[in-house]
Length: 259
Image 1 (cartoon, rainbow, N blue to C red):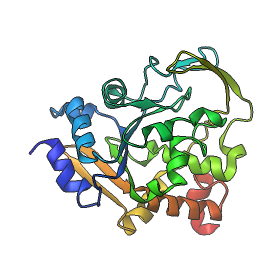
Image 2: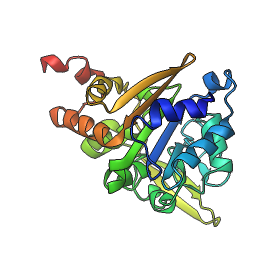
Image 3: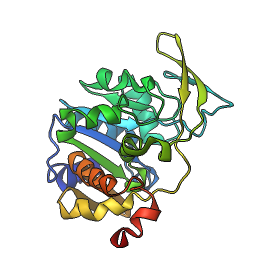
């Protein structure tokens, strides 16, 4: 059985992922690569599985596009989120959002809608980002997050709730200026509030999601593969932010039973 077949029968089908679903993928691919899995084959398999839906991968550049190297070209600036997402960006995605640090690449019927306004707000994961647009639409009801070789610490979607509930606590107060080059070569001047460097605790949400049958983890060899339902993640994280405006910080999560 290939990894792609294993993924379909072990996680995607049992968790209810359909051909029309939206699938967000975060990955550290080296573990699968050592087991002979090909990145291109996985991209093709995911696109074939959700052939009426959307495949989304982060193409982040926050390490390389900085206030001193502040030009982001949506067509040519490479990502630093690994071989799978970079291959997806260059060979499979039809659209990439215009954002200097947290762009995403998308293939699917909603790709244009989800990527067209990422730069219209000053945060990385705002209401106009792909994450915000999914969260505030019916796409959320049939959306999933697939974590390959990583876990909830890599779940960028959670940053949306930080910006939504407590912008000032989770984003730096000073803005940085960037030049964004669009596909038509036009330049957009953009001011960004970067995330703070505060340590986050995203793992705290895993147990609640598992108890809701909304998260499952399986091992392929020694590589952990996690799949979770976005509508449940939204419910859990929103509830925690209603308890505390610092819900994703250890000062809340480590001591939440005593608060």
